[in-house]
Image (cartoon, rainbow, N blue to C red; front, top):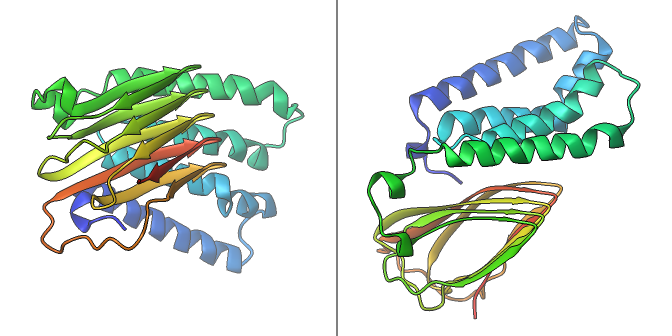
Length: 236
């Protein structure tokens, strides 16, 4: 569950508008004022992706996650509203590559990241893109601040066994599209997983039984999206 402090006034306004709009649409449907195909499109999982994308765009300076959610949702939603005689395979792969291109473009333009703005040492963060390839990296910094990792038709493994978190809230953004990532994290770390999965998954498989102290001042938030891909957290 996300902290309410993460919700800025803009994202709260968007959420309120979406809820009000959903209520109005439900009323219209209950009084038979909506065409059948429109109701089928609005209350569907592609529309849910679009809503999540809008919220992501409002909440995060890096627009890549939100744009990917919007693109995938729109791709599956349009045929529900406007029936077209097109082969699914004719559009699927072009849409995937277009989405990946937009993601990379907006990733490179994401200049508001705190670790870049504050001049953080490069050894204290992750900032990697793996396309049709992979990375295995062992982190040894005593001041890990988070960062971003993207795996597209590839994979990555990060070992934090000999690593320590920096004080405060540290955010690691993860994007897995037809790819995956694995994080080996000490069991005593206070980790929050907030990854949106679309035809994929992200699991916390760390050993249970270790109580996190209530006075802990170091946190790691893993946020992002897994589309036709996945990720996992483990501990040894």
